[in-house]
Image 1 (cartoon, helix red, strand yellow):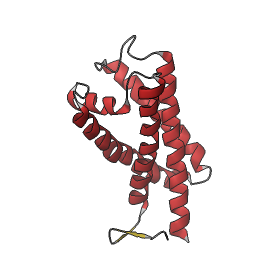
Image 2 (cartoon, helix red, strand yellow; image 1 turned 180 degrees about the vertical axis):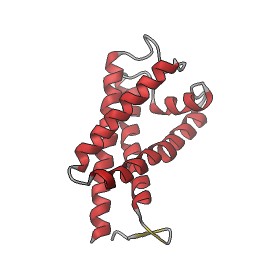
Image 3 (cartoon, rainbow, N blue to C red; image 1 turned 120 degrees about the vertical axis):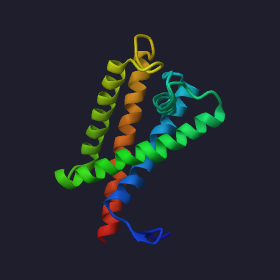
Image 4 (cartoon, rainbow, N blue to C red; image 1 turned 30 degrees about the horizontal axis):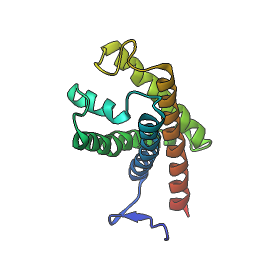
Length: 162
């Protein structure tokens, strides 16, 4: 299948590339996070729980709410953060984009975790909410998001330039 420079009848620009890269990276990140949560049991908080708690102050109560939270978290939040990074890359250059996107993801993780702890968000902050292994697994998921974000943006940039 040949890559098309147009999507939905419009030429792909930096915003659309960032959105697509953020969504694809979000799918990779959530795949690891859900595998870890349901199979490895290292983490006790899914990223979709974060999205739900920040929107409603409660974890999803059933499967439908969990699926809706997952879709919104991936399509809206991860897509938005991908757009932000895609525009930041213009300012800082695309050289070593995968390293920069991994660093960006780690900085986001740290920043959001600090804000959550300062604001004492229920279910997401406080002692005992997440064991060390869970925090490290979530950090790995965040690095997966950052690396995939950089790789997808790099690929989209190459396709658009050719």
